[in-house]
Length: 124
Length: 161
Image 1 (cartoon, each protein chain N blue to C red):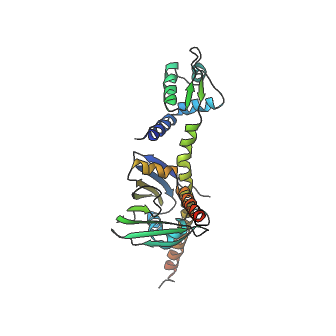
Image 2 (cartoon, rainbow over the protein chains, first blue to last red):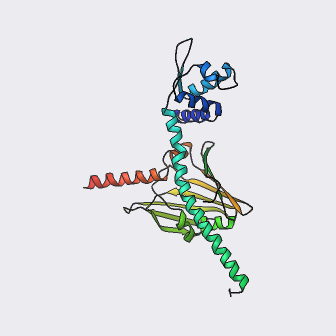
Image 3 (cartoon, rainbow over the protein chains, first blue to last red):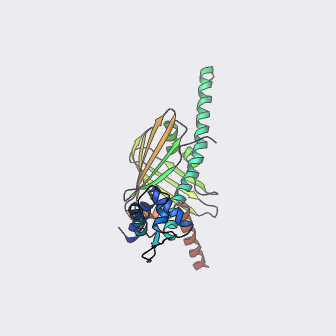
C-alpha cells in the first residue's frame, strides 16, 4: 500500500460516519472547540474527541495547540481529492446507462408490437 | 422520466470496482443490449461527438470482442478482450484491455443480471490486476483517458511540426 492509498483509505473511513460528516459541515462555517462541536449531538465529549481523532488522522481537520480551547479547523484539500474520484467515473457511466434505458424502452415496445401482431395472426 | 435504479459505483477491496444499476426491462433484453453489436452501438458510446466504428462480438467462451470509438478529430480509442463465461440471461464474464493502456494490465469483468417483476438489477464487478490499476481508473475515467490520448497526439503533432 502506498502512502497515497493509506491517505485515501483514511479519508473514506473518516467520511463514512454521519457524525463525522456533520462535524465537517459545521467546521465549514468556521472553527469550533470540542465543546461547541459536541453540542448538537447527544454524545459525550470523549465520544466526540474519538471522531475528531479520526478526522485529524485523515488530515481533514487541524486542531489548535491552545490547551483550553483546542479549536478545530477544516482542511479542504483531502476532501476535494476524495470527492473527485468516483463522481467523474459515475457520471460517465450514468450517461451510457441513460442511453441504455431509452434503448430498452424501444426494445420492450418492439417486443409488444411483435407479440400483438402474432396474436392478430399477421406473422407468418 | 421514469425511475431506474440509480447507478452506484464503489471501490471494493484492494482491486475491484463494483457498479450496480437497475433497469426497467427483463434481463434477456439487458443481456442482449450488452452482447449484440447493433444494440451496443446504440449506448456504449464515449463523450458527445464520438462514434463506434468497430463493434465486433464473438459471443462464446474463448470468443473475442473488439470495440473502437472515434472522436470528432479522428482520435481513436480501442479495447479488446475474451469471453470467459457466457450464460444468458444472467451471467457474463470477460477480460478487458485497452489499446492505449490507460490503466496497467488487464481487467476481468463479471456481469450478473438478476430479475424481479420485470426489472433487472445489474451488478458488474471489475477486477484489476493491482490496486494501482484500480485506483488509476477511478482517478482518470474514460473522458480523462481520452483527454490523455489527445494530449499525446497534440504533443506528437507539435514535435513533428
